[in-house]
Length: 189
Length: 181
Image (cartoon, rainbow over the protein chains, first blue to last red):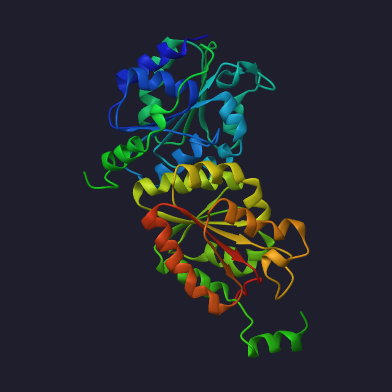
């Protein structure tokens, strides 16, 4: 069982020009350690982070899109795996932190913490899917996750982090969405 | 509809051609169509869209996915049309509220009004699910157009242009079942 913040610290060392999409608890920790224009915070409708990412991956095929999802979030938008599997963007990496709880909603357990997300991804035609339980394994697979032809999927087993409430207002500022548009060339600087 | 009634509709221009809708959408710069199939628009819109080499059809499982994908596409300045049934619109309500309304992403939603009585305005339908659609759009301050005959199609392009120029959602209520040819 890994610590999410440790995982994010490892990820930070390897992130360069990728768009990183995150939400809720993961987003709070990611912005603390790696605040940058190429971050995107999925907001307002739980579970849609991977759908935002799918749209970005289709629109920006030269840019790697990395979605940092939660297991509770994925369960709220589980069919996204089927849609991603069919669209099959080569520049798409979906990382799901599995702590078995709705951490952002009080720490209640997800309906079945034993859910095998790797198997679900594979069943949805995302053949490059794995489960990772140690930071060493994560470090070993990170280059593959960030560079191999997608779609790629990894379920990371982590311990539950600190429970909320967290303040998401800062990360949801419109200026952040504008900064991302400039960073990817959608708007002029 | 029997043959004499259909002929009468053609004479009186009470027809809606799917290909004309698709042409208007393409002229508005739409490159992607995001859709869950809807019987109302299946033959007249979705099948022709699937065969259209100028449009990228992204088939999704649930309508709320479309709101996220549509928003994501804007980061590459790609325009999309969300094609869904009115039941899907109701299903996706929270995503529409969050992504399109509160966070001001453009979203062009084409909503099939399956079962709407002919010649009846959506608000006047006797069917509960249909008559609540326009009032919901008004409550959410989402502009909409009722597309019932070919004469209404000219309103599609400007509405999409405005939605993308000013980052807001817009909706088209497809009242009459579009013809395939």
